Length: 223
Length: 217
Image 1: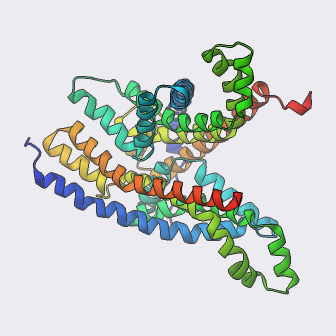
Image 2: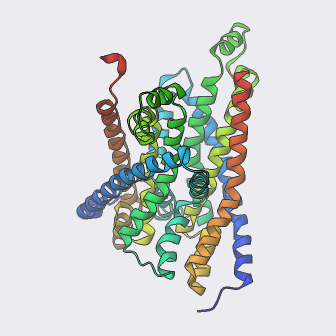
Image 3: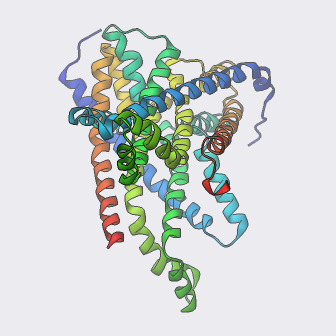
């Protein structure tokens, strides 16, 4: 084809890419933590709340999981100002990611809760623990241990989805790549490098999750 | 700026068929790639397994949006410009192949080992064994998660809007540019996606329950 690759332009813009990657990491990490918090509360409501709370959470989960993230971003970022709520790009991105991420994590945590044998809960009640104590001390730790792996994969998907918030010009990695592309016209080089950075990010996140799993949930038989 | 009228909703409804069309094309393309990946993944040759693992890692470990950018802008740059619909179909197929390959590998491996051993003992050739013994059983196991994945695929087609292919999301953007009622328009777009995806989610769940019953008997 006789095309010469010019990676030098990308190299000159490396700081911009690294800044973008750093924002992607922060945005992802914060939305992972917030999603997990929302998911724990949501899964508690979904499994042991009043009927109307259960229905409401189920409807929320179902609606988010059956619509594209891109459209959710549009509704939040372009739609909300129309009804008087104005958001800065990075805040809008974070809200969209948490709303989206928590719907998936509620389902995962709920599956973990429902997998716990009923005897555990009965025993905890028999010991005189309060409903919230039973959830916090008996149900939740076991549920999180059981679903740690799917939770980790879901969080990596959340990180990859963060590339979509570039459409509202939050200046994360994908937005930085588009910016460099529009300046240098080296689309192939910029995007291949950016894809490489995302690959490193997702491998690093799964490494961190494996480490956290060993710290929080050491193997029982290893003791 | 003008107000939204019935024609706009009709436009969204007709744009839905491009979303459906793109989903079907990507499912067929992804199915072909996925079948190859699944077979490579369970192959007895190590290098084939490694290639498949690498493929899955790259496509599942990077954002679909950038994969589409690379296909669309990259192809243009390398002197073979692809129209948006083709770039979107190609990118989505390559991506779906990685996910379907992983689902189908799991299904193939869920078929009891003894089936494979019995087929080998009968002297069946690899392809005959796969076609007549393993794949028919694996397909039953794979149905529920494959239908579940279709939901993801339909949602993923929305990203084609960003490279300029006019499907449901892009149609919503175009109407919004003319009328500027983003909340109404994008909520409607979301509801239309929901109407496409929800039946698939329900079907996948039903199939899963039926399989669970069949296995607990």
